[in-house]
Image (cartoon, helix red, strand yellow):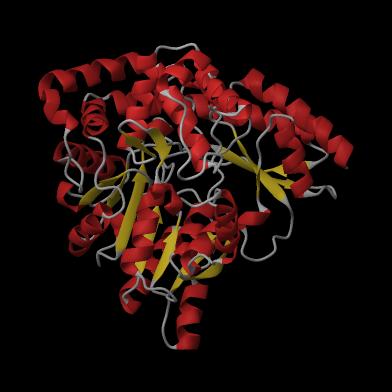
Length: 497
C-alpha cells in the first residue's frame, strides 16, 4: 500500500480544481507519475493492487486499471502477470530533483550568444499594453468603425471561404500591395508599385530585416540623436555600430554624414531617418537636407532607411513628401505601418523596396514568420479601396489635433512651473523638458505607480541630453481623462521638486 503522505498526494491531484477538466483516471495517473518523478516511489517498488487503491481513493477499480494502463504505456511502470505492478527500471534514467538543481546552476553560468546578450541586456521594447495616460504612440481605438470592419471581413470570408485560411504569399497579397501603392503614391508622394512592396507584421520587423539583410555585424549605420529606441535596439542586436548624428529644428545635421566620410575615407552603410516627424523631437527634415542625404547615399552607395511611422497625422498644412519619392537613385527603403493609423492588433506594416531588394527581403522574411495572415490583409484591402481608411484618418486627424491642443493647455495650467512643452505639428505625442531639478527616472517611476505612463527622453539619446524630460502621448485619451492624469502628475512633481 501507499504510505499516508503518498496517498494524500494522489488525493490532492484528484481534488485539484485546475485538473477538473481531466478524466478521473488521468488525474490519478498524473498524481502517481509525479510521485515517480519526484523520486518518492523508487525503482522496483510495487504499486498497490488496483482493488486496494480503488477502495482507498473511493473510486472504481476500472478507474485505477485505466490509470495503471496509461502509466504502463508511458513506461513508468511494469505489469507482471500474477505479481502486480512495479516502478519500471527505465525510471533510473529520469533526472532526480538534486541533479536537476545542479543542471540549473550550471546553466546559469553558461553565457548567451553575443547577439542574445545584446538583445537581453537591451531590455527589449517597452510596449504600453494598456492605453493609460500618457502612453506614447497609441491610437484611439474606441472610435474605430468596427461594424464596417466586421462587415468587410464577412465579405472576405464569404468570397474566399476556406482559401483565406491557408498560407499566403510571403511578399503579401497582391490586392493589398496594390492598394498600399495607390495610397502612398497619392498621399505621400512615393514612387511605389505593387511589385516593390513587401507586407510585414510591423515596422519593427522591417527594421530587423534591414539590419540583417543590408548590413554585416560591425558595419556602421548613422542614426538620429535622439532616436526611436526600437530602431537602435534592432541595429544593436544585429551587431551594427550605431553612429549618432545630432539634430536641430530642421532635422538631421547632414554635414556630419559628409564630414565622417571625408575624415575616414569611407562612410556608413546606411542612415536611419524619421524625416516627416522626427521621433521624439517632432522636427521635420528640411527639403535641402533630404536632397543632400539622397546625394550622400548615391555617392557612397549607402542605404536610406525611412521610417514614416505616423505621417498621416499632420495638423498644420500638408505633410512633406517622403524621401523615397524624391530619390531617383533607388537607395531608399520606405517603412510604413497601420498600427498607429488604425489599431495595434492589426499587425500589418510594409516596406517599399528598390526592385533588386524585393526577392532577398522576401526570402529573409520567410525565416522570421513566413507570411502575414490572409483575412486581415484582404479586409484591410477593402477598407482602403472602399474609402473607409481615408475617412477614418480625416476624422482621427481632427480628434487628435483637438486633444493635442487640450494637452498643451492642461500642461500650461497645471505643469507650467515644472516643464516646457513643445507642441508638435503632427504625430501622437508631445515632448516636454523638465525645468526644475526633478529626477526624470523618479518621475517616470512614480507616475507609473500612479497609473500614468511617460516615456523618458534620456534613454533615447546616445549622448547626454542637455535637459531631462519625457514624451506624453495624447491620441488615445479624451480631454477629461487627460485632465485627471495631469493633476496626478502635478501632485507627483510637487513632491519630487
